[in-house]
Length: 186
Image 1 (cartoon, rainbow, N blue to C red):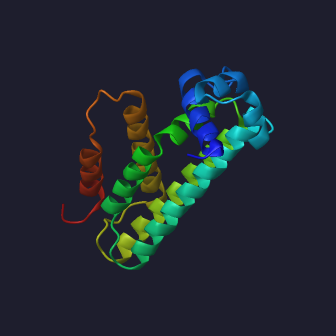
Image 2: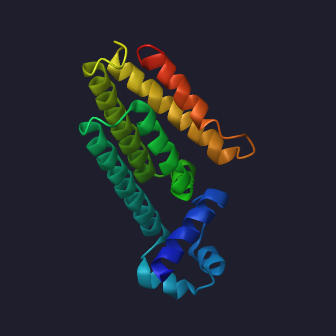
């Protein structure tokens, strides 16, 4: 692993454990087993480290949405698949998401990233519902409101998954619940 990646990964771990304000470059260096000077060769401050974490996360999420939009265009995407892709993405990016949740109430950039995520996820879900309705697969529902419900269900389940890992994963049941609520004939 490259030093810059080590710093970012360790920062995510520390921020999600102790919070942004209690994470110092000194504690970060100690946990990563590097010198504080090494951190400053890559980043000017812990704020810049957080900025890089959030920027990288937004780019990863944008790539997920691009991939999902491509298969929606190809007539082989479904709402269930979109939700599954989001849950898989969340599994792969737990440290990023915990960092976002840990800093959301205290750092404006985190609020902006969360706003970006909610807006982009809602927009995608609206597209998926609209395409499903055009194909006469999705019930006639208020697309905007139901997209927000899907986002809310996803983010709520995500918080449970991240912060209460002893609870069995029930994302498949959540996806099936959403399918029954929105897909015709179920």
